Length: 228
Image (cartoon, rainbow, N blue to C red):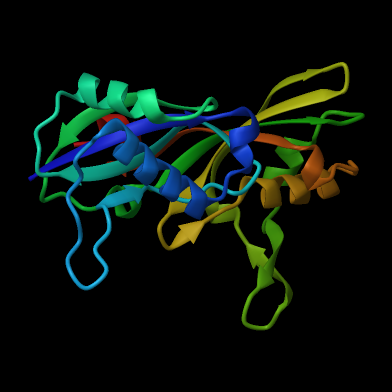
């Protein structure tokens, strides 16, 4: 048995593909490319393919991750080429390596993700004062109670900075908690920041891209592609 970690970008119209459809796309691509995956057991076996973490509909990514298992040994570069020969425009494998079989799933290893957000604003967001608040809250929908509730998220923000403000365009970089049991949606944080700064910016006006995801080891962030 062999286990492979792959990274891919998702851009353009492909940002509107759902997480479930993305899983189906990769599985169909394996069949088209004649990649031989390992299968789960039971009455309804399926390919052992696992995407690290769902990305919200409408978000792009420069580097997202998934892993597959196979009974067959592949050269990582060959496996990437096989996938790319069957993938549509807007999605491309950019990295592949074999990883240890006994390691935890990558979805359980992720700790943080880095995002870039671009939106129109008539002034620069007041990030310094926003982060200086004792509490930072976002609104999120409570599925059980079916209403919007406040959630305190200051501890889930590792960094937030404006890297460009020019001609009414803001570009922000942020590193946010992205663990299996604790995730902060960048769009929700931006809505809170814009409201605090007195900016009228809707979620539909934000262009958000996930740049990479990380494992935290001894206080340092290590990209998933380099994690042991």
